[in-house]
Image (cartoon, rainbow over all chains, first blue to last red):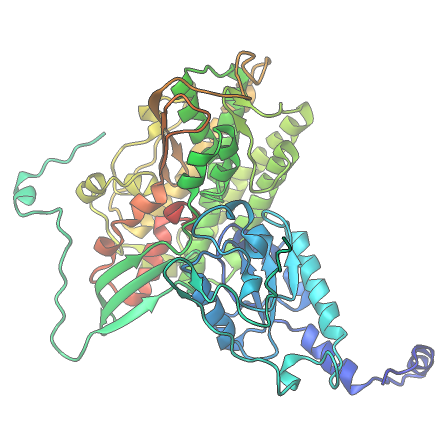
Length: 204
Length: 390
Protein backbone atom coordinates (compact mmCIF):
# COMPACT_ATOMS: atom_id res chain seq x y z
CA UNK A 1 0.00 0.00 0.00
CA UNK A 2 1.46 3.30 -1.06
CA UNK A 3 1.71 6.25 1.26
CA UNK A 4 -0.17 9.38 0.25
CA UNK A 5 2.38 11.60 -1.48
CA UNK A 6 1.13 14.89 0.00
CA UNK A 7 1.07 13.45 3.50
CA UNK A 8 4.58 12.14 3.00
CA UNK A 9 5.89 15.56 1.93
CA UNK A 10 4.10 17.23 4.83
CA UNK A 11 5.57 14.75 7.31
CA UNK A 12 8.97 15.17 5.66
CA UNK A 13 8.85 18.87 6.50
CA UNK A 14 8.32 17.90 10.13
CA UNK A 15 11.36 15.67 10.02
CA UNK A 16 9.49 12.38 9.85
CA UNK A 17 10.35 9.89 7.18
CA UNK A 18 7.54 7.59 6.16
CA UNK A 19 7.89 4.75 3.72
CA UNK A 20 6.66 1.24 3.02
CA UNK A 21 8.62 -1.96 3.23
CA UNK A 22 8.06 -2.42 -0.46
CA UNK A 23 9.52 0.96 -1.39
CA UNK A 24 12.49 0.54 0.91
CA UNK A 25 13.16 -2.97 -0.31
CA UNK A 26 13.00 -1.99 -3.97
CA UNK A 27 15.09 1.12 -3.35
CA UNK A 28 17.81 -1.07 -1.93
CA UNK A 29 17.58 -3.54 -4.79
CA UNK A 30 17.65 -0.99 -7.56
CA UNK A 31 20.50 1.06 -6.12
CA UNK A 32 23.03 -1.76 -6.06
CA UNK A 33 22.62 -3.75 -9.22
CA UNK A 34 25.93 -5.52 -9.70
CA UNK A 35 26.54 -6.58 -13.29
CA UNK A 36 28.58 -9.58 -14.28
CA UNK A 37 31.96 -8.89 -15.87
CA UNK A 38 31.23 -10.70 -19.06
CA UNK A 39 32.02 -9.32 -22.47
CA UNK A 40 31.20 -11.05 -25.71
CA UNK A 41 32.11 -8.80 -28.61
CA UNK A 42 32.17 -5.21 -29.82
CA UNK A 43 29.48 -4.01 -27.39
CA UNK A 44 31.68 -5.08 -24.47
CA UNK A 45 34.05 -2.22 -25.29
CA UNK A 46 31.18 0.25 -25.03
CA UNK A 47 30.18 -1.44 -21.78
CA UNK A 48 33.70 -0.85 -20.45
CA UNK A 49 33.58 2.73 -21.71
CA UNK A 50 30.35 3.20 -19.75
CA UNK A 51 32.06 2.24 -16.53
CA UNK A 52 34.98 4.60 -17.18
CA UNK A 53 35.41 8.18 -16.08
CA UNK A 54 33.32 10.00 -18.66
CA UNK A 55 30.10 8.04 -18.44
CA UNK A 56 30.63 6.83 -14.88
CA UNK A 57 28.15 4.06 -14.28
CA UNK A 58 29.00 4.29 -10.56
CA UNK A 59 26.37 7.03 -10.31
CA UNK A 60 23.75 4.29 -10.62
CA UNK A 61 25.31 2.00 -8.05
CA UNK A 62 26.35 -0.46 -10.71
CA UNK A 63 30.09 -0.03 -11.06
CA UNK A 64 31.01 -3.22 -9.22
CA UNK A 65 31.51 -5.72 -12.02
CA UNK A 66 31.71 -9.18 -10.52
CA UNK A 67 33.70 -11.87 -12.29
CA UNK A 68 31.60 -14.62 -10.71
CA UNK A 69 27.96 -15.21 -11.66
CA UNK A 70 27.17 -16.11 -8.03
CA UNK A 71 27.77 -12.53 -6.92
CA UNK A 72 26.08 -10.80 -9.83
CA UNK A 73 22.52 -9.51 -10.18
CA UNK A 74 22.60 -8.44 -13.79
CA UNK A 75 23.87 -10.05 -16.93
CA UNK A 76 24.67 -7.70 -19.79
CA UNK A 77 24.74 -9.81 -22.94
CA UNK A 78 27.08 -7.50 -24.78
CA UNK A 79 27.64 -8.71 -28.27
CA UNK A 80 27.18 -11.54 -30.72
CA UNK A 81 26.17 -14.85 -29.20
CA UNK A 82 27.41 -17.64 -31.43
CA UNK A 83 26.08 -21.17 -31.34
CA UNK A 84 29.26 -22.30 -29.62
CA UNK A 85 28.88 -19.65 -26.92
CA UNK A 86 25.09 -19.86 -26.34
CA UNK A 87 25.24 -22.91 -24.00
CA UNK A 88 27.80 -21.13 -21.81
CA UNK A 89 25.65 -18.01 -21.65
CA UNK A 90 22.62 -20.01 -20.52
CA UNK A 91 24.75 -21.93 -18.02
CA UNK A 92 26.10 -18.69 -16.56
CA UNK A 93 22.58 -17.37 -16.28
CA UNK A 94 21.52 -20.52 -14.45
CA UNK A 95 24.39 -20.03 -12.01
CA UNK A 96 23.29 -16.52 -11.07
CA UNK A 97 21.32 -16.14 -7.87
CA UNK A 98 17.81 -14.65 -7.86
CA UNK A 99 16.81 -11.87 -8.26
CA UNK A 100 18.57 -11.67 -11.60
CA UNK A 101 18.05 -9.49 -14.61
CA UNK A 102 19.28 -9.48 -18.19
CA UNK A 103 20.03 -6.62 -20.57
CA UNK A 104 20.44 -7.62 -24.21
CA UNK A 105 22.87 -5.04 -25.51
CA UNK A 106 23.14 -4.40 -29.20
CA UNK A 107 21.63 -5.71 -32.39
CA UNK A 108 23.48 -9.04 -32.22
CA UNK A 109 22.20 -9.98 -28.78
CA UNK A 110 18.66 -8.98 -29.75
CA UNK A 111 18.38 -10.70 -33.10
CA UNK A 112 21.73 -11.65 -34.59
CA UNK A 113 22.21 -8.19 -36.02
CA UNK A 114 24.36 -7.78 -39.13
CA UNK A 115 25.53 -11.39 -38.78
CA UNK A 116 22.04 -12.86 -38.72
CA UNK A 117 22.37 -14.41 -42.17
CA UNK A 118 25.43 -16.37 -41.06
CA UNK A 119 25.39 -20.03 -40.13
CA UNK A 120 26.94 -19.72 -36.69
CA UNK A 121 25.13 -16.84 -35.01
CA UNK A 122 22.25 -17.19 -32.58
CA UNK A 123 19.24 -15.14 -33.63
CA UNK A 124 18.68 -13.46 -30.32
CA UNK A 125 19.52 -14.53 -26.78
CA UNK A 126 15.88 -14.06 -25.73
CA UNK A 127 15.20 -17.48 -27.23
CA UNK A 128 16.85 -19.11 -24.23
CA UNK A 129 16.75 -16.72 -21.27
CA UNK A 130 14.23 -14.06 -20.27
CA UNK A 131 15.47 -10.59 -21.23
CA UNK A 132 14.31 -7.53 -19.30
CA UNK A 133 15.67 -4.67 -21.40
CA UNK A 134 16.68 -4.65 -25.08
CA UNK A 135 18.94 -1.87 -26.35
CA UNK A 136 19.22 -1.48 -30.10
CA UNK A 137 22.35 -0.14 -31.75
CA UNK A 138 25.50 -1.48 -33.30
CA UNK A 139 27.05 -0.90 -30.85
CA UNK A 140 24.71 1.12 -28.60
CA UNK A 141 26.30 4.28 -27.25
CA UNK A 142 27.21 4.37 -23.55
CA UNK A 143 24.27 6.71 -23.01
CA UNK A 144 22.00 3.96 -24.35
CA UNK A 145 23.37 1.52 -21.78
CA UNK A 146 22.76 4.08 -19.05
CA UNK A 147 19.21 4.46 -20.36
CA UNK A 148 18.82 0.70 -20.14
CA UNK A 149 19.99 0.81 -16.53
CA UNK A 150 17.44 3.48 -15.71
CA UNK A 151 14.72 1.45 -17.41
CA UNK A 152 15.72 -1.58 -15.38
CA UNK A 153 15.71 0.46 -12.18
CA UNK A 154 12.21 1.66 -12.99
CA UNK A 155 11.15 -1.93 -13.56
CA UNK A 156 12.62 -3.04 -10.21
CA UNK A 157 10.99 -0.08 -8.49
CA UNK A 158 7.58 -1.01 -9.84
CA UNK A 159 7.66 -4.65 -8.75
CA UNK A 160 5.23 -5.40 -5.89
CA UNK A 161 6.38 -7.85 -3.24
CA UNK A 162 3.22 -9.94 -3.37
CA UNK A 163 0.67 -10.89 -5.94
CA UNK A 164 0.85 -10.56 -9.68
CA UNK A 165 4.13 -9.26 -11.14
CA UNK A 166 6.28 -9.96 -8.08
CA UNK A 167 9.97 -10.65 -8.64
CA UNK A 168 10.89 -14.23 -9.38
CA UNK A 169 12.73 -14.91 -6.16
CA UNK A 170 9.50 -14.32 -4.24
CA UNK A 171 7.52 -16.55 -6.56
CA UNK A 172 7.90 -20.19 -5.57
CA UNK A 173 6.50 -21.41 -8.87
CA UNK A 174 8.74 -19.34 -11.13
CA UNK A 175 11.18 -21.18 -13.33
CA UNK A 176 14.67 -21.17 -11.86
CA UNK A 177 16.70 -23.36 -14.18
CA UNK A 178 16.61 -22.94 -17.91
CA UNK A 179 17.56 -25.87 -20.16
CA UNK A 180 21.04 -25.50 -21.64
CA UNK A 181 20.96 -26.01 -25.42
CA UNK A 182 23.35 -28.38 -27.11
CA UNK A 183 24.65 -28.51 -30.62
CA UNK A 184 22.54 -31.04 -32.49
CA UNK A 185 22.84 -32.31 -36.00
CA UNK A 186 21.95 -29.06 -37.73
CA UNK A 187 21.30 -26.45 -35.10
CA UNK A 188 21.17 -25.92 -31.37
CA UNK A 189 18.66 -28.20 -29.66
CA UNK A 190 16.17 -27.11 -28.50
CA UNK A 191 15.98 -24.10 -30.83
CA UNK A 192 14.25 -22.12 -28.09
CA UNK A 193 13.24 -22.62 -24.49
CA UNK A 194 9.56 -23.13 -23.71
CA UNK A 195 7.87 -20.28 -21.92
CA UNK A 196 10.68 -17.85 -22.68
CA UNK A 197 10.21 -17.23 -26.34
CA UNK A 198 6.89 -17.74 -28.07
CA UNK A 199 7.57 -19.37 -31.42
CA UNK A 200 6.02 -17.11 -34.06
CA UNK A 201 3.15 -18.75 -35.89
CA UNK A 202 3.41 -18.47 -39.64
CA UNK A 203 0.02 -17.83 -41.24
CA UNK A 204 -0.07 -19.14 -44.78
CA UNK B 1 64.38 -7.43 -42.00
CA UNK B 2 66.85 -9.23 -39.80
CA UNK B 3 67.18 -12.90 -40.60
CA UNK B 4 68.60 -14.80 -37.70
CA UNK B 5 70.92 -17.56 -38.79
CA UNK B 6 71.74 -20.16 -36.21
CA UNK B 7 72.52 -23.48 -37.81
CA UNK B 8 73.31 -25.34 -34.62
CA UNK B 9 69.93 -24.42 -33.19
CA UNK B 10 68.15 -25.32 -36.37
CA UNK B 11 69.71 -28.77 -36.38
CA UNK B 12 68.26 -29.39 -32.95
CA UNK B 13 64.84 -28.47 -34.23
CA UNK B 14 64.35 -25.13 -32.48
CA UNK B 15 61.05 -24.72 -34.14
CA UNK B 16 59.47 -27.47 -32.12
CA UNK B 17 57.60 -26.41 -29.01
CA UNK B 18 59.52 -26.58 -25.81
CA UNK B 19 58.57 -29.53 -23.59
CA UNK B 20 58.21 -29.02 -19.87
CA UNK B 21 58.21 -32.23 -17.89
CA UNK B 22 56.17 -32.50 -14.69
CA UNK B 23 58.33 -33.18 -11.64
CA UNK B 24 56.55 -36.47 -10.96
CA UNK B 25 55.09 -35.51 -7.60
CA UNK B 26 51.34 -35.34 -7.34
CA UNK B 27 48.90 -35.06 -10.22
CA UNK B 28 48.52 -32.60 -13.04
CA UNK B 29 45.62 -30.20 -12.65
CA UNK B 30 43.74 -29.33 -15.79
CA UNK B 31 42.10 -25.92 -15.75
CA UNK B 32 39.87 -24.46 -18.44
CA UNK B 33 40.45 -20.69 -18.38
CA UNK B 34 37.55 -19.13 -20.20
CA UNK B 35 35.45 -18.68 -22.29
CA UNK B 36 34.00 -16.56 -19.51
CA UNK B 37 37.11 -15.31 -17.78
CA UNK B 38 37.58 -11.63 -16.97
CA UNK B 39 41.03 -11.52 -18.51
CA UNK B 40 40.45 -13.24 -21.81
CA UNK B 41 39.46 -10.07 -23.68
CA UNK B 42 36.19 -11.61 -24.71
CA UNK B 43 35.45 -15.25 -25.30
CA UNK B 44 38.59 -17.33 -25.54
CA UNK B 45 39.48 -20.53 -23.77
CA UNK B 46 42.84 -21.84 -22.69
CA UNK B 47 43.03 -25.44 -21.51
CA UNK B 48 45.97 -25.33 -19.14
CA UNK B 49 47.64 -28.30 -17.50
CA UNK B 50 49.30 -27.27 -14.26
CA UNK B 51 51.97 -28.94 -12.19
CA UNK B 52 51.49 -27.05 -8.95
CA UNK B 53 51.64 -23.45 -10.18
CA UNK B 54 53.71 -24.24 -13.24
CA UNK B 55 52.21 -24.49 -16.72
CA UNK B 56 53.05 -27.79 -18.36
CA UNK B 57 50.70 -27.67 -21.32
CA UNK B 58 48.48 -24.99 -22.79
CA UNK B 59 45.97 -25.51 -25.53
CA UNK B 60 44.09 -22.52 -26.95
CA UNK B 61 40.49 -23.14 -28.00
CA UNK B 62 39.15 -20.77 -30.63
CA UNK B 63 35.81 -20.22 -32.27
CA UNK B 64 33.55 -18.78 -29.58
CA UNK B 65 33.08 -15.62 -31.66
CA UNK B 66 33.12 -17.09 -35.14
CA UNK B 67 30.72 -14.82 -37.00
CA UNK B 68 31.34 -16.13 -40.54
CA UNK B 69 32.69 -12.81 -41.73
CA UNK B 70 34.45 -14.30 -44.77
CA UNK B 71 31.44 -16.31 -45.91
CA UNK B 72 29.10 -13.32 -45.63
CA UNK B 73 31.58 -11.22 -47.63
CA UNK B 74 31.66 -13.77 -50.42
CA UNK B 75 27.92 -13.35 -50.87
CA UNK B 76 27.88 -9.57 -50.64
CA UNK B 77 29.05 -6.86 -53.01
CA UNK B 78 32.50 -5.38 -52.49
CA UNK B 79 31.29 -2.20 -50.85
CA UNK B 80 28.84 -4.06 -48.60
CA UNK B 81 31.75 -5.75 -46.84
CA UNK B 82 33.17 -2.44 -45.69
CA UNK B 83 30.92 -2.14 -42.60
CA UNK B 84 31.74 -5.75 -41.68
CA UNK B 85 35.45 -4.97 -41.62
CA UNK B 86 34.72 -2.47 -38.82
CA UNK B 87 33.67 -5.36 -36.66
CA UNK B 88 36.82 -7.42 -37.16
CA UNK B 89 39.06 -5.59 -34.74
CA UNK B 90 36.57 -3.36 -33.05
CA UNK B 91 39.18 -1.17 -31.42
CA UNK B 92 40.65 -0.08 -34.74
CA UNK B 93 37.88 0.05 -37.33
CA UNK B 94 39.64 2.69 -39.43
CA UNK B 95 42.77 0.64 -40.06
CA UNK B 96 40.58 -2.34 -41.01
CA UNK B 97 38.76 -0.13 -43.50
CA UNK B 98 42.06 0.98 -44.92
CA UNK B 99 43.41 -2.54 -45.37
CA UNK B 100 40.28 -3.64 -47.19
CA UNK B 101 40.17 -0.49 -49.34
CA UNK B 102 43.85 -1.01 -50.19
CA UNK B 103 43.23 -4.60 -51.30
CA UNK B 104 40.34 -3.58 -53.57
CA UNK B 105 42.30 -0.63 -54.93
CA UNK B 106 45.14 -3.01 -55.81
CA UNK B 107 42.65 -5.33 -57.47
CA UNK B 108 41.28 -2.66 -59.80
CA UNK B 109 44.32 -0.37 -60.02
CA UNK B 110 42.55 2.53 -58.39
CA UNK B 111 44.52 5.64 -57.45
CA UNK B 112 43.73 7.64 -54.32
CA UNK B 113 43.86 11.46 -54.21
CA UNK B 114 46.58 12.96 -52.10
CA UNK B 115 44.29 14.62 -49.56
CA UNK B 116 42.52 11.34 -48.93
CA UNK B 117 45.87 9.63 -48.31
CA UNK B 118 46.77 12.25 -45.73
CA UNK B 119 43.40 11.89 -43.98
CA UNK B 120 43.87 8.12 -43.93
CA UNK B 121 47.28 8.49 -42.31
CA UNK B 122 45.96 10.88 -39.66
CA UNK B 123 43.05 8.57 -38.78
CA UNK B 124 45.18 5.41 -38.78
CA UNK B 125 47.73 6.91 -36.44
CA UNK B 126 45.04 8.25 -34.10
CA UNK B 127 43.64 4.72 -34.08
CA UNK B 128 47.07 3.36 -33.21
CA UNK B 129 47.44 5.75 -30.29
CA UNK B 130 44.09 4.84 -28.77
CA UNK B 131 44.59 1.12 -29.35
CA UNK B 132 48.01 1.05 -27.71
CA UNK B 133 46.82 3.18 -24.79
CA UNK B 134 43.87 0.93 -24.06
CA UNK B 135 45.81 -2.30 -24.62
CA UNK B 136 48.39 -1.17 -22.05
CA UNK B 137 45.52 -0.23 -19.75
CA UNK B 138 44.05 -3.73 -20.06
CA UNK B 139 47.47 -5.31 -19.49
CA UNK B 140 47.95 -3.41 -16.24
CA UNK B 141 44.37 -4.19 -15.24
CA UNK B 142 45.19 -7.88 -15.55
CA UNK B 143 48.18 -7.30 -13.33
CA UNK B 144 45.75 -6.29 -10.61
CA UNK B 145 45.73 -2.50 -10.85
CA UNK B 146 41.98 -2.53 -11.02
CA UNK B 147 40.81 0.39 -13.08
CA UNK B 148 43.19 3.30 -12.61
CA UNK B 149 45.54 2.92 -15.62
CA UNK B 150 42.63 1.85 -17.78
CA UNK B 151 40.74 4.98 -16.79
CA UNK B 152 43.68 7.14 -17.83
CA UNK B 153 43.77 5.34 -21.16
CA UNK B 154 40.03 5.60 -21.74
CA UNK B 155 40.04 9.29 -20.84
CA UNK B 156 42.31 9.88 -23.82
CA UNK B 157 40.50 7.35 -25.97
CA UNK B 158 37.21 9.21 -25.50
CA UNK B 159 38.81 12.38 -26.88
CA UNK B 160 39.97 10.52 -29.98
CA UNK B 161 36.60 8.80 -30.35
CA UNK B 162 34.95 12.22 -30.27
CA UNK B 163 37.03 13.15 -33.31
CA UNK B 164 36.01 9.95 -35.08
CA UNK B 165 32.41 10.54 -34.24
CA UNK B 166 32.31 14.13 -35.49
CA UNK B 167 33.96 13.04 -38.74
CA UNK B 168 32.36 9.69 -39.51
CA UNK B 169 29.19 9.66 -37.45
CA UNK B 170 30.07 6.71 -35.24
CA UNK B 171 32.31 6.20 -32.25
CA UNK B 172 33.57 2.73 -33.03
CA UNK B 173 32.17 1.46 -36.28
CA UNK B 174 33.39 4.21 -38.56
CA UNK B 175 32.85 2.72 -42.06
CA UNK B 176 34.77 5.67 -43.47
CA UNK B 177 37.11 4.61 -46.28
CA UNK B 178 35.93 3.99 -49.82
CA UNK B 179 37.67 2.48 -52.83
CA UNK B 180 39.52 5.48 -54.23
CA UNK B 181 39.25 7.86 -51.31
CA UNK B 182 37.24 8.66 -48.21
CA UNK B 183 33.55 9.15 -47.60
CA UNK B 184 33.41 12.74 -46.35
CA UNK B 185 35.90 15.58 -46.30
CA UNK B 186 37.38 16.93 -43.10
CA UNK B 187 36.33 20.43 -42.13
CA UNK B 188 38.56 23.22 -40.86
CA UNK B 189 36.97 23.00 -37.43
CA UNK B 190 37.62 19.24 -37.28
CA UNK B 191 41.27 19.88 -38.10
CA UNK B 192 41.46 22.49 -35.33
CA UNK B 193 39.92 20.06 -32.86
CA UNK B 194 42.37 17.35 -33.98
CA UNK B 195 45.32 19.70 -33.54
CA UNK B 196 44.13 20.45 -30.03
CA UNK B 197 43.80 16.75 -29.14
CA UNK B 198 47.15 15.87 -30.73
CA UNK B 199 48.83 18.73 -28.86
CA UNK B 200 47.64 17.14 -25.63
CA UNK B 201 48.78 13.61 -26.48
CA UNK B 202 52.52 13.90 -25.62
CA UNK B 203 51.58 15.09 -22.14
CA UNK B 204 49.27 12.09 -21.80
CA UNK B 205 52.01 9.64 -22.82
CA UNK B 206 54.43 11.34 -20.39
CA UNK B 207 51.89 11.02 -17.60
CA UNK B 208 51.14 7.43 -18.49
CA UNK B 209 54.81 6.57 -18.52
CA UNK B 210 55.51 8.38 -15.27
CA UNK B 211 52.69 6.38 -13.73
CA UNK B 212 53.76 3.00 -15.02
CA UNK B 213 57.20 2.53 -16.58
CA UNK B 214 59.25 2.53 -13.42
CA UNK B 215 56.58 0.94 -11.27
CA UNK B 216 58.20 -1.75 -9.23
CA UNK B 217 55.37 -4.26 -9.45
CA UNK B 218 55.12 -3.84 -13.21
CA UNK B 219 58.85 -4.37 -13.62
CA UNK B 220 58.90 -7.38 -11.32
CA UNK B 221 56.05 -9.08 -13.11
CA UNK B 222 56.97 -8.17 -16.69
CA UNK B 223 60.72 -8.33 -16.98
CA UNK B 224 62.00 -11.71 -18.08
CA UNK B 225 58.49 -13.16 -18.32
CA UNK B 226 57.01 -14.54 -21.54
CA UNK B 227 60.16 -14.30 -23.62
CA UNK B 228 59.65 -14.69 -27.35
CA UNK B 229 62.82 -15.42 -29.27
CA UNK B 230 63.22 -13.57 -32.58
CA UNK B 231 63.79 -16.79 -34.55
CA UNK B 232 60.55 -18.30 -33.34
CA UNK B 233 58.70 -15.02 -33.88
CA UNK B 234 59.82 -14.83 -37.51
CA UNK B 235 59.07 -18.47 -38.12
CA UNK B 236 55.58 -18.27 -36.67
CA UNK B 237 54.72 -15.19 -38.75
CA UNK B 238 54.28 -12.93 -35.75
CA UNK B 239 54.00 -9.25 -36.63
CA UNK B 240 53.44 -5.86 -35.09
CA UNK B 241 54.62 -4.76 -31.63
CA UNK B 242 55.10 -8.42 -30.66
CA UNK B 243 57.72 -8.93 -33.37
CA UNK B 244 59.41 -5.60 -32.77
CA UNK B 245 59.47 -6.27 -29.05
CA UNK B 246 61.65 -9.27 -29.88
CA UNK B 247 64.07 -7.00 -31.71
CA UNK B 248 63.16 -7.73 -35.33
CA UNK B 249 63.07 -4.57 -37.40
CA UNK B 250 60.02 -5.17 -39.53
CA UNK B 251 57.24 -2.66 -40.01
CA UNK B 252 54.97 -2.79 -43.05
CA UNK B 253 54.89 1.00 -43.09
CA UNK B 254 58.65 1.02 -43.74
CA UNK B 255 58.82 -2.14 -45.85
CA UNK B 256 55.88 -1.60 -48.20
CA UNK B 257 55.69 2.22 -48.21
CA UNK B 258 51.96 1.81 -48.73
CA UNK B 259 49.95 5.02 -48.84
CA UNK B 260 52.30 7.92 -48.35
CA UNK B 261 54.30 6.68 -45.36
CA UNK B 262 57.65 7.32 -47.11
CA UNK B 263 57.01 11.06 -46.79
CA UNK B 264 57.07 11.09 -43.01
CA UNK B 265 60.00 10.94 -40.66
CA UNK B 266 59.49 8.38 -37.94
CA UNK B 267 61.46 5.66 -36.25
CA UNK B 268 60.65 2.05 -35.44
CA UNK B 269 61.14 1.26 -31.76
CA UNK B 270 62.67 -2.14 -31.10
CA UNK B 271 62.87 -4.30 -28.01
CA UNK B 272 65.91 -6.06 -26.67
CA UNK B 273 64.79 -9.07 -24.69
CA UNK B 274 61.40 -9.96 -26.14
CA UNK B 275 59.66 -10.07 -22.76
CA UNK B 276 56.39 -8.44 -21.72
CA UNK B 277 58.14 -5.27 -20.59
CA UNK B 278 59.71 -4.82 -24.02
CA UNK B 279 56.33 -5.18 -25.69
CA UNK B 280 54.89 -2.65 -23.29
CA UNK B 281 57.76 -0.25 -23.98
CA UNK B 282 57.52 -0.70 -27.75
CA UNK B 283 53.84 0.29 -27.55
CA UNK B 284 54.60 3.40 -25.50
CA UNK B 285 57.32 4.46 -27.95
CA UNK B 286 55.11 3.71 -30.94
CA UNK B 287 52.51 6.08 -29.54
CA UNK B 288 55.16 8.80 -29.49
CA UNK B 289 56.16 8.06 -33.09
CA UNK B 290 52.51 8.06 -34.17
CA UNK B 291 52.04 11.49 -32.63
CA UNK B 292 55.01 12.71 -34.71
CA UNK B 293 53.44 11.31 -37.89
CA UNK B 294 50.09 12.95 -37.14
CA UNK B 295 51.77 16.30 -36.54
CA UNK B 296 53.60 16.08 -39.87
CA UNK B 297 50.46 15.00 -41.72
CA UNK B 298 48.39 17.80 -40.21
CA UNK B 299 51.08 20.30 -41.22
CA UNK B 300 51.35 19.08 -44.84
CA UNK B 301 47.66 18.29 -45.52
CA UNK B 302 47.02 19.51 -49.09
CA UNK B 303 43.76 20.83 -50.54
CA UNK B 304 41.98 18.91 -53.25
CA UNK B 305 39.37 16.22 -53.78
CA UNK B 306 38.97 13.30 -51.36
CA UNK B 307 37.52 10.87 -53.88
CA UNK B 308 38.91 9.91 -57.25
CA UNK B 309 36.29 11.14 -59.72
CA UNK B 310 36.72 8.02 -61.87
CA UNK B 311 36.09 5.70 -58.94
CA UNK B 312 33.03 3.52 -59.43
CA UNK B 313 30.98 2.55 -56.41
CA UNK B 314 27.72 1.20 -57.78
CA UNK B 315 27.78 -1.88 -60.01
CA UNK B 316 31.42 -2.36 -59.08
CA UNK B 317 32.81 -5.33 -61.05
CA UNK B 318 36.58 -5.79 -60.96
CA UNK B 319 38.26 -7.74 -63.74
CA UNK B 320 39.17 -11.36 -62.88
CA UNK B 321 42.33 -11.48 -60.85
CA UNK B 322 43.62 -11.50 -57.32
CA UNK B 323 45.16 -9.00 -54.94
CA UNK B 324 46.62 -8.93 -51.46
CA UNK B 325 46.61 -5.62 -49.63
CA UNK B 326 48.31 -5.32 -46.30
CA UNK B 327 48.90 -2.55 -43.80
CA UNK B 328 50.52 -2.19 -40.43
CA UNK B 329 47.49 -2.28 -38.17
CA UNK B 330 48.08 -1.47 -34.48
CA UNK B 331 48.20 -5.18 -33.70
CA UNK B 332 50.37 -6.26 -36.61
CA UNK B 333 50.17 -6.99 -40.28
CA UNK B 334 46.53 -6.95 -41.37
CA UNK B 335 45.99 -8.26 -44.87
CA UNK B 336 43.02 -8.87 -47.13
CA UNK B 337 43.31 -11.38 -49.95
CA UNK B 338 40.71 -11.12 -52.67
CA UNK B 339 40.04 -13.21 -55.75
CA UNK B 340 37.69 -11.76 -58.30
CA UNK B 341 35.97 -13.76 -61.00
CA UNK B 342 34.56 -10.67 -62.67
CA UNK B 343 31.30 -10.75 -60.72
CA UNK B 344 29.67 -8.37 -58.31
CA UNK B 345 31.02 -10.15 -55.25
CA UNK B 346 34.45 -11.60 -54.53
CA UNK B 347 35.04 -15.26 -55.35
CA UNK B 348 37.29 -15.62 -52.32
CA UNK B 349 37.70 -13.19 -49.48
CA UNK B 350 40.32 -13.98 -46.90
CA UNK B 351 41.46 -11.96 -43.90
CA UNK B 352 44.95 -12.36 -42.52
CA UNK B 353 44.35 -11.26 -38.94
CA UNK B 354 47.38 -10.27 -36.86
CA UNK B 355 45.71 -11.30 -33.61
CA UNK B 356 45.20 -14.94 -34.56
CA UNK B 357 48.72 -15.41 -35.89
CA UNK B 358 50.29 -13.64 -32.91
CA UNK B 359 48.32 -15.93 -30.65
CA UNK B 360 49.68 -19.15 -32.15
CA UNK B 361 52.91 -18.92 -30.11
CA UNK B 362 51.06 -18.48 -26.83
CA UNK B 363 52.01 -21.93 -25.58
CA UNK B 364 55.71 -21.40 -26.30
CA UNK B 365 55.71 -18.22 -24.27
CA UNK B 366 53.72 -19.61 -21.35
CA UNK B 367 55.40 -22.96 -20.74
CA UNK B 368 57.27 -23.12 -17.46
CA UNK B 369 55.72 -19.95 -16.07
CA UNK B 370 53.28 -19.62 -13.23
CA UNK B 371 49.57 -19.64 -13.95
CA UNK B 372 49.28 -15.99 -12.89
CA UNK B 373 51.78 -15.06 -15.60
CA UNK B 374 49.69 -16.73 -18.29
CA UNK B 375 47.12 -13.97 -17.93
CA UNK B 376 49.81 -11.33 -18.35
CA UNK B 377 51.49 -13.00 -21.32
CA UNK B 378 48.11 -13.36 -22.94
CA UNK B 379 47.39 -9.68 -22.30
CA UNK B 380 50.70 -8.61 -23.79
CA UNK B 381 49.82 -10.28 -27.11
CA UNK B 382 47.03 -7.70 -27.45
CA UNK B 383 44.30 -9.58 -29.25
CA UNK B 384 40.72 -8.84 -30.13
CA UNK B 385 38.47 -11.85 -30.44
CA UNK B 386 36.46 -10.42 -33.31
CA UNK B 387 39.60 -10.68 -35.38
CA UNK B 388 40.83 -14.01 -34.04
CA UNK B 389 37.65 -15.96 -34.76
CA UNK B 390 36.16 -13.68 -37.43
